[in-house]
Image (cartoon, rainbow, N blue to C red):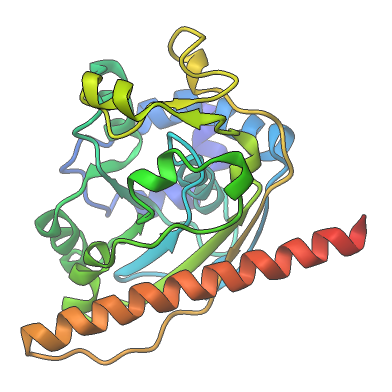
Length: 271
């Protein structure tokens, strides 16, 4: 772990002051860092822009598009922030984890910094000044057909409500390339229901290969773009807070889709 300590000294200093309640384990992160580095630099060749917009400390929420059965952009965001020379920060990935029956996968995600979704968990993290990321496309985002790539599903506005209630800045994050990385051929809804899963997507890897190979991905060029924070005002009234969360969800969705479209046009011009 000595090389890890040397490479991520600033991240470790920042993480030492971070919340550890949910099982985060720096030793596990150190073990998988070479894999994350390979995926980031060589497999997906990720380009990241806009991280300097994030505050150096204090609570903030990143809202992104997911693009596969597992939110691969979450792993790349985690690595990008960990290796940032300008603003290294630990990020808590809030996600629905109840559907994961494999205890190995569940524990692994928790140790890397995933947190089970609940309003209470999000508020607890915000109250401690933590950086949180969430991918609110929900179940439709898990099984988005390949023909619908780079088109967002409607965000679950309730996922943004805790941030709005606490007046936390919200940063949209657009990731281009993640939909191509894990092409979904079809979603077998009846099989998913039978197995108690939110979705059962058929990909070139899942369910044909054994775990963890069935969570694999094709190589594809990625671009992750963090957009300036949304502007909103908080309120003491419940109805107004919920209406504000709905609007911010729509604004975040619109900003991300517009950025994806811009990146696609930029990509087409290069070709």
